[in-house]
Image 1 (tube, protein in one colour):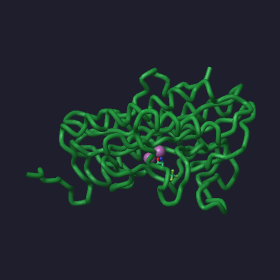
Image 2 (cartoon, helix red, strand yellow; image 1 turned 90 degrees about the vertical axis):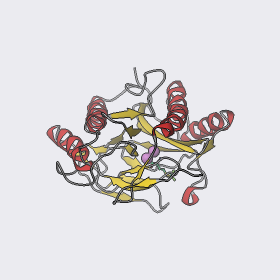
Image 3 (cartoon, rainbow, N blue to C red; image 1 turned 30 degrees about the vertical axis):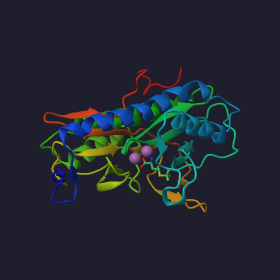
Image 4 (cartoon, rainbow, N blue to C red; image 1 turned 180 degrees about the vertical axis):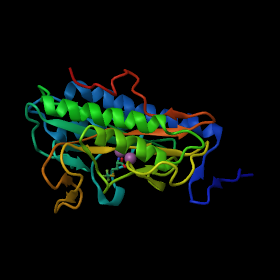
Length: 268
Ligand code: MF3
Ligand code: CO
Ligand code: CO
């Protein structure tokens, strides 16, 4: 007999304790792939070459890329350089000294999805970019701190937004985190801004991503003619970090922890 699938009023699935193991396995592979990319991110390499290395690691692990074939997307990663906010398409474009980039990978292992992204730098990290990366990473960590039963999704958004704005940077509103598990994108939309006590209440067994995008300048974005690449309207630098997490009885577990402890920093 199938066990009954529990779903909240808001349509958020509540996974069972035994489901955490599958998420840890998928999350670990995604994080290992991001760890392995660190030495490959150098001036002169193309983002297409980086994506090919990612696709090979996914295949060699006996896993599946969640992004290849997703809504017509054809690559194993999104690689978003400088003012690209997210969904940068791997291409023949070569990295230049001082470029900062986000690499976002989602894998499927035994039907479970592991989705994570982090920042890299090619060559020497510009001072302004370093501050942006630090703030964005810390914003994600504060969001994860707020992720525990009894808190709400608004508490997560508030923790992220208030920290970013204290640092005089801005949170992107046009893209959000998402539920995941045995699917890539599920309810709820995990907003990276909000007010305390608003939104669905967090419960044990919720699996979702937190993936704040932070801009040095204004929050507005636009999508280029390729229908994927999202950029800052004011051309200011943008950064993003993403973890997949699960709510436990007392807090949360991060599924996409870096085995090499290189989630941050990935430079230097
Ligand atoms: N991994 C992205 C996320 O965090 C989604 C990428 S969809 C793609 O949700 F098609 F652009 F790859
Ligand atoms: Co995601
Ligand atoms: Co992602």
